[in-house]
Image 1 (tube, helix red, strand yellow):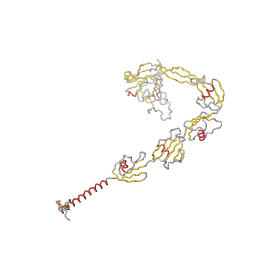
Image 2 (cartoon, rainbow, N blue to C red):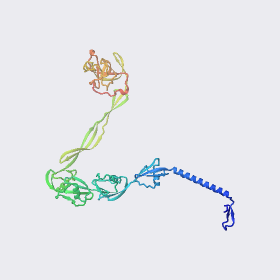
Image 3 (cartoon, rainbow, N blue to C red):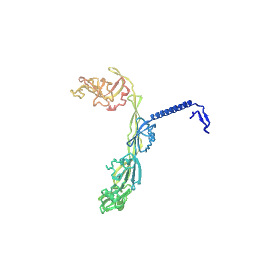
Image 4 (cartoon, helix red, strand yellow):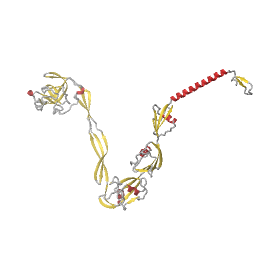
Amino acid sequence: MGSLGNLKDSRDGTHPINLGFSGSALAAMNRWTFFKWIAWLGLGAFCLWGYWRSQQTVTIVLDGQILSIRTHQRTVGDVLQEAGLTVRPEDRVSPPLTHPIQPPAMISIRRARPVRIWIEGRGVEPSRWIDIYTLHSDPRAILAEAGIPLGPGDALWVDGRRGEVDSPALDGREPPREIRVVRSVPLVVRLENGRRHLIWSTAPTVGAALREAGMLLDPADRLLPGPETPLNGGMQISLFRARPITVEADGHIRVISTTARTVRELLWELGISLHGQDRVVPGEESRLQAGETVRVIRVVEGFEIEETSIPFQTIWEPDPNRELDTWVQRSPGRNGVLQRRIRVRYENGQEVAREVVDETTIRPPEPRVWVYGTKVVVRTLETPDGPIEYWRRIRMLATSYSRSTAGVHPSAAYFGRTRTGLPMQRGIVAVDPRVIRLGWKVYVPGYGVGLAADTGGGIIGRRIDLGYNDEDLVLWYRWVDVYLLTPVPPPESIPYILPDWPAPPSP
């Protein structure tokens, strides 16, 4: 067999074809191709190994079953889509679908189960089927999730088992497949005492509903509609019995026997009309009871006009340009007038109520305005002891006292002590702090300089009690001018408006 360099012509197989390669060159070329393919295969394997290493393991817990996958997906939703798992909006997925995958990656899925609900409306609402998916096992929770409220007396069937709405048999341990709700029908029973009794029942007839409610019927009772009437929503039934009724109207009292069931029917039967605000007790729509008394009350109303005075207020306004203890009246003030319209109600000729319908101020009050001075002027007074400076003069009723005449028992701990704790002696005066502040110095002609350091139960307003020692007590009871000595206190401590009591005698 020849070398690859001397191939025969393929057309006739007789003439060799020279390719220009020797046997050794061709062998070297085959080895190079082999190694090149080995390199490409190694690179591909390395890439596949790197791709595999870049994946992460995700554990999926589906209704308690564990599934592990490796994935390059980065969100919960993409991982589930790659795993071929479709979730419903009612399913519980944790973490959420948009949550990124983070190690250790775990996805929990709890599938919602299908439940079919049949609502038998019985005229209260349309009957219908409702199909939902839910995670709940408790039938009440499933109905609440479906937005189906349970009313009083509704019957509930769960997978063919009957139970009341609050029955412990419906404990929700077994996930239900079908729930049936039979709506109870409201039945209004108008009793002979005028009251209404509401019954919710799933019974087929009126009589069966009353028996279920424990309301036994006497054969003589007349029931409208009859007891065999099919029960439907919004039905009202009435019991009719004859009874004695006492009627008081227009000055007459009579006892009648009537089959009327309401006061309105009774008045129509007797030909008694109500006009205006006339009323009847009990009310026209009230149900009559045996032995009841019905009173017709004739009502008449009238109006009265009443005027009362509105007192005016007194306003004090400061004037820094006017001297202290001077004032002027800017406005005298005037009372206003308030007019009231009063409705007077008479029942059967007797006044029973008065009511103010409206009030109108026909003249508003005008305040009395006083302008008082706040300007302090320091003056000099010549005294036997020499000149003194004062900033205020107050006309006051002066009395005197000493430690023995102060009304304190000698055994008391505070005997001989003043309000400020100073010993009682000449030069101490008792004042009303609302007129003269404690700590201020005063000058009283005939007494001299005193320190306001005490108070007293009877020293109120324009009163001053002059202190003495027991051995030199001088009795006072006269009106004097009291001078407040400088320095002038801060403006905020000055009582600009003094009380006018006690008042000095008229000159």
